Image (cartoon, rainbow, N blue to C red):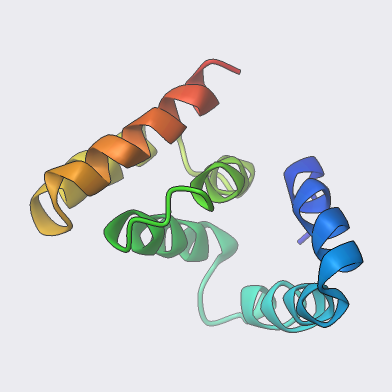
Length: 107
């Protein structure tokens, strides 16, 4: 997985403020976990976006929505994930995700 501009924007302050967290993020999370062959990067993106929505972690969503698109997930599929999770994770979680998704569509 190549480094995206949003990944760089996330890792830069992280590297400055919490260097060990940045190292673990780069080496373990994106260097090992995301590169495992058992799931495609596309599938990992769908799972991650769904988990972030379900857990109401909307601050992390912009980065992972961009990454999902880079990994081949379509805007239509992301829209469907948000709609589907409204029933399983709750309407407020889906509505919060929608505001982050709208920003992605405005790009």
